[in-house]
Length: 416
Length: 115
Image (cartoon, rainbow over all chains, first blue to last red; front, top):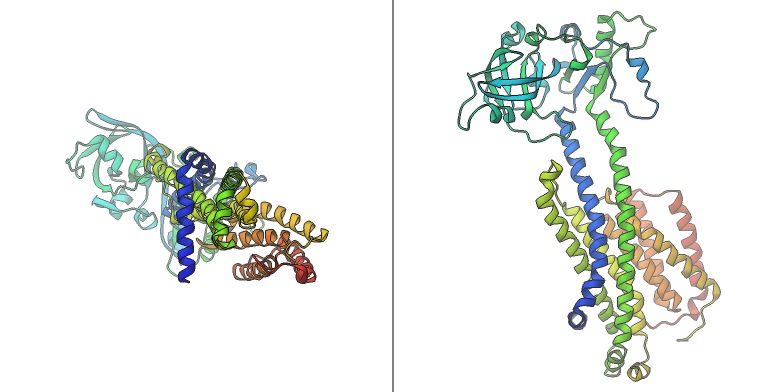
């Protein structure tokens, strides 16, 4: 073992000496691997980050939450959209029926979304996301009121002019250090008292971050807009009780909604029960395609890089044939020569791969803002990059190294 | 023994093996293998690299080539079993590998035992 380590040390010394003696050649030959690793791990890093962000956004909808609306969140080529056109939208009457008859529901809420200008004195935010919600929304949706409180049941039922605002809205309308709670803002030309500010969530790739939202009681907004209109996206969000599966709750909801909408036994449902898992499954296919495309492109780059290393190793062996002959005549074993060149190839390849990973890391530090999401080089991607570099070094370096180890010492010494 | 002539069948096997390595190597960093675990691509890659080196050994009529191929083959079986990734293509690969191993055994005595 000691002898092996000593030989390994000597091989590393010879290899590093040879690489440093030909700096430009070393640089050019490791460039192929650098570009290959950079290409493939960049794609994997971006796909993983995108996936993590989208999955995070989907999970924020809640895994045990069912959304009742007109359109199903289906994916696929045979989407029968014409069937859903004539369906009625979700209504507050549906919510009342569910709250009255359901035994599996923990909390349920009705929600509509509109875009309007929010004003405060001379400050205004155009096209702000206004959500009209009923009481119970705080139990269905995942968010935290950082300052103030959510609507009371009475405020929600009576449609009081109170609002809960997101962090971006707060920053846009109020000066730093000013407490928005208790102050007034204007939406639809009417005054609303701010009663709470939601904790900052950051950007959501599904575009539903609470930071940009203003929540007001649905019973207030229904006096101003037609909440049955499809462009206001009326929907119910329903959360199952603990220990109740989504399937059990969906069975019960189907019965209640069919009875509420007076559907005859033979007719199809005129509502869709959607879950976050459907969205998640829909994105699986997309991520697989992006990953595969990146894999093919990066695979070719790495292959070219591997050929580059093999080529440079053949040149290296040819150049040092004389030296190999001297080493062998002085007693160097075949495996010593093999290790010497193999380590050189692996070292070259790993250095190239590490450089590629370093560039990716630099990009993750700077490009996060331009992508609008956090991009991180994960441990698994870094390990994969180094593994691939190592294997490319072994595979492309073995043939030249083995050839060198098999040289006849006398012929090798006599070569120029 | 050192310069034993390589039979044509071994040349064919080695060429098939080199092509097989070329086509399976990208599998090391494929999304499907990556999903199996952090170190799975490394293990799978080591098996492929070992197979490649073993073909070089057989090409040079070295016993260690045949021996390394058997080790790589057994490791691959273990890998497929532990990761539950047996498929149609892996069964074809196993049949080919069995053919390779049998041929190597036939010519094993004619191979050189040195490095």
